[in-house]
Amino acid sequence: MTEPTHDEAHAGALGTRLNWLRAAVLGANDGIVSTAGLVVGVAGATENRAALLTAGLAGLLAGSMSMAAGEYVSVSTQRDSEMAALAVEKRELREQPEAELEELTEMLRVRGLSREVAREAAEQLTARDALRAHARVELGIDPDDLTNPWHAAWASFLAFTVGALLPLLAIVLPPAAWRLPVTVVSVLAALVLTGWSSARLGAADPRRAVLRNVLGGALAMLVTYVTGRLLGAAGV
Image (cartoon, rainbow, N blue to C red; front, side):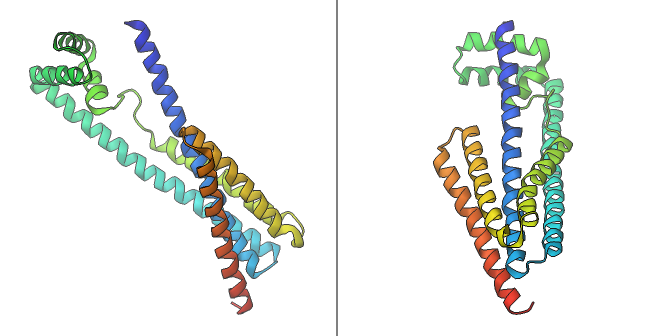
């Protein structure tokens, strides 16, 4: 009985790490695309390095803070829902333990165990920790590993910032004549990497993910650059 529990703990930890890694890749991808679109749009209107740096930094800070705040609110809501569900389950276990034991037995039976084995397993799990058993089997929640909104917020903030730094540095460091080509090439190369990474983490076809990523980023830069050129030509 000890060995399966050990494997399950590792599987759960691995799944959590993969989810965080996937979120980090997607956050970096957002930082790349949104900041690239912003600085390329400004580059279409002006070659002034100070204006490009100001726009890029403003986009980086606004985007990273927005991502962090949104992730904090979202994960806080999820955590509140998990805690509320655990509170309901705790009350039901206290008020109607027999009904909850029967419910756990039925859920285990539906998963492929015979009635007798399911009943025995439910009794053993209940005797060990009834709340944890129901939380994992019925709710899909690990009471010892609830989502942390602060971790999610910081992860999103850092991932977006790292992604946004690439187009920002690419647009302000090279000479004026090289800024746009260096930025476009750097951004497309980074989008290839993040598209491939997100696909591999999700066990999907990397080619489709990379193509979607590159086309989306290229379209964003094209639209903002053309808009910047038009506004610059109009003297706005």
